[in-house]
Structure formats: C-alpha cells, structure tokens
Amino acid sequence: MNKIIVAIDSFKGCLTSKEANRAAAEGVRQGMADAEVRQVAVSDGGEGWLDAFQAAWGGELVDVRVSDPLGRPVMAQYLKKGDRAVVEIAKASGLTLLRPQERNPIVATSYGTGQLISDAVRRGCKDVIVGLGGSATSDCGMGMLRAIIDVFSSNGRWDGVRALDGVRFTIATDVDNPLCRENGAAHVFGPQKFAPMGATPEKIRQLDARARLFAERSAHHFGYDRQDCPGAGAAGGLGYAFMQYMNAGRRSGIDLLLDAVYFDDLLNGARCVITGEGSADRQTLMGKLPFGILQRVKARRVPVVLIAGRVSDRQHLLNAGFSRVVCINPADLPLEEAMKPETAKRNITLACRESNGSLRLEIEQNLKQN
Image 1 (spheres, one colour):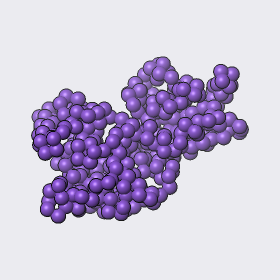
Image 2: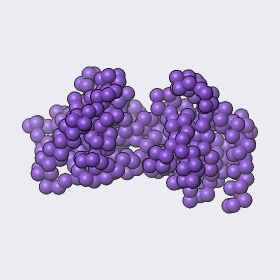
Image 3: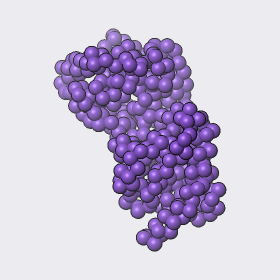
Image 4: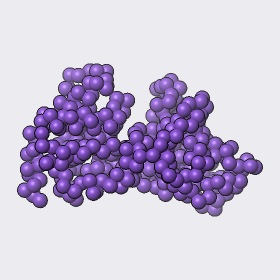
C-alpha cells in the first residue's frame, strides 16, 4: 500500500479543510487503487480551528450567545474536552460576521471572545487554547477583558477577577508582529479590517495611538510590558492582551495542531504528503500552513505536493522544497465560478487524479532514496 497523507488548509470562502481533503483523497483513489489515504483536517489558528481539533480530539461543541464585533447577538461555539477548551476567536470576533461595508476596527470589539472564554472557565476548563485568526477587531483585547471582568468581577476591576487563577492559556498564531509602531497591529493588519477605501492614514495612526496608550497604562499597573513580544500584534492586539493580562504562552498554530494529531507518528511509512490552500505564492513561505507542513516533512525526505486555486511565484515555492506545485483551476476559469464549492471540489479531485502518474514517480524515487 502507498500511504499518502492529505492535509489541506481551507479554501477561504469556498471549502473547509475537511471538504478539500475529501475531494483530494477521492482524486488520489481514482487513479491509484493501492493508495492508503489518511486525511488530516488542519488550520493554523483561523478558519477551521475548532473543526481540526474536534477531528483530532473529539469533545463537544458548546454554543454560547455572544456579541459580534458590533455588539449584536450571535451564536458562537468553542470546543470542550474534559477540562480543556479550544477557542476560535473568529467565531465571535471575526471579519466573516460583518458585511464589507460594516468593517471598522475603530469601533469593533472583541467582547464576544471574552464571553466565550468566560463560559469555558465557568464550566471548569483549566487549559484554554486560543486560535488567533480572522479577527475584525483592533482593540488590543480591551473588549475581551471587559467581558471577563463583567462576568467574574465583583468590583469592576481586573484585580477582582480570581476565576482565572490556575487557568493556563496558549495562543496559537504564526504572526510575529509587536503591538505598536510601524510593524504593529494597526499599521500591518489594520487596513484589511476597514470597509473598502476606509483605511486612511489618520485612522491607522488613531488605532496605533490607542494601542500605545493602553500598553503604557497596562505596564504601569503590572510593572512589566509585553507589547514588543512576538505575536503581541496578532488579531488586532488580542495576542498582547493574552500575554500581558493572562500570562499566555504562544505557539505556532500549525505546529500546535500537528502535535495534537501526532503528525510525526502519522508520517511513519508515508510516501507522499499533499497539502494546499486557496492561493499559493511567496507569502506561503512566510509561516502559512502549507509551509509549516513542509517544514515537518522535510526531515523525513517525503515529497510534499502543494495544490491551490491560484498559484504565482511557482519557482520560489519549488525552491523552498515542494516537490510539485499544482494549480487546480484552468487559466480561463472565471473567479466567480472557481469559488463555487462544487467547482472547487471537482477541480481538486481532477487535479489529484491527473497527478497520480507524477505521484507514483515521486513515490518510487522516495523509495530508492530511503
């Protein structure tokens, strides 16, 4: 049997990781009858984070009525497994909850994320893993902290919160940015959180000034300052709030998940790994999920095939170590059609089926080398 691992990121706005995996697995099986295909749902902390952990661990999804980034009621979920909780902040504070014209990080709040965390702690969770991705907010986590205070504090002060004692927080993000200044949350990530044409230089400066003031006051209160820690700028400064106020540890999202699914053990006997994402280019090599998988697999000398709905900078991707880079869509396919789930599934299946000849060659070469 030729063991092939399929671990594809979600095609944002189109397919979940599970759906993309199933389509790829079907294509492999259609052309390689002796293939043993192992599917791994994956996420780097953003879309699909809960699904990936539930596939790995089981557990139950807990529904909580929370506030969306504009304060409107919305139903969100987190995953609970024993005294562990997995939170995907985009479920409560994500861009996907807003229409494009509603995007405004100056007013958007992370209050709903705080409500999710508070519910998990109230239910006895002592180990909380938080995926920081897809945030619509840039409030440095002030909304989240206010929600936790509102739930647990008797005197309206952070000092009154004792329920978090003994709770361990881990934030999952591949973002290294600090909280403030030119490489901080506002300047680097703020523009994409505004409505189209809404991110003026003055508004970005306003967000950054608010972050600097909050960090200064927080440092004065605690006697230490974590605004420059790598990842503090993640999710509009939520990374900073977790590290400064909750003493959270930080890990790469994809590494954390791959450890959870025992990916290194799964690689034993594997002949090929297929990964992918919606759009692949040189930014893929800047800590995105397929690159994280490539880094894990490199030491095993197992070929890694990258598929995507759109491909550019192909040679850079090949030079980085991907054995093949495959665009699933014909060059003349309109974007609107390519984004239809059924079209994407069909094209993934077709691309993987047509790649079977190359896969066999790579498998044979891999066997000779090892």
